[in-house]
Image (cartoon, helix red, strand yellow):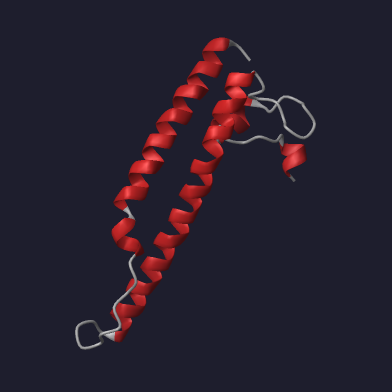
Length: 111
């Protein structure tokens, strides 16, 4: 992999990290528990709000997982191991890295 490609992945990872951190800050209000007061909110509306809150929690969980993988990907760039599978040391195809530059395994080892 040439230096310009590696640099573009580095920039993409940093931009992704900033975007995910901003989304996490914006979504804090949606993670609050749903009030149980049925005099203010009907049962169906409350159930809908609970479902929305659960979806927001899952989205937050996935963002946090991806945020945790970004420093590792940046470290692999710095060490020169980016684009190589951590299991078998084969090259990871560029298409896979373009989907998610935090991937550390090739398709064969990921399955």
